[in-house]
Length: 202
Image (cartoon, rainbow, N blue to C red; front, side, top):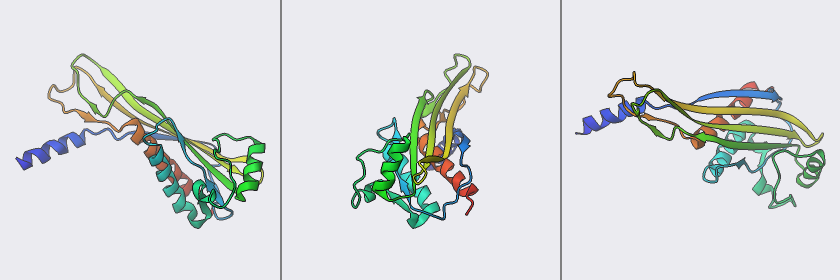
């Protein structure tokens, strides 16, 4: 009985669609992380459930790059009078004020977007002909130089898991397990931040 269960589980997991990721750096692909104080803003996303996971994952990845040079916004607010909310896209005047209140040199902003959850987490072959659906998310990162009030880096990652089948498929085909858009969002953030580590100059 147990052997049959584990065999079934292995077959289902083998049909798992983990997602594919693409990356784009508009500017600032190679950065020097060896100098200054880096402030990590609270993440923004349209997923209330996974926003905390997005923040924790992003903070952990940047912490591995920056070490003690990374300061999180909540910790900063215990000692500095920083605005209660700091937006994702900021004007030069807003950056100047944040520089004065935080005494940091750089600001890291991370934003996640759930684009679609059309494939769901479990897909079956309906037998009604060709079918294609996808779960998709994107993550954008903006890093500002607070001293000059300019964008130091702008990048994006897109994660997509596609479920496809047709009436030509095996009638006994197992269902496919798809990464949810929320899971793709968090994974895309991790993978994008690892790109910063890969291309760093210091």
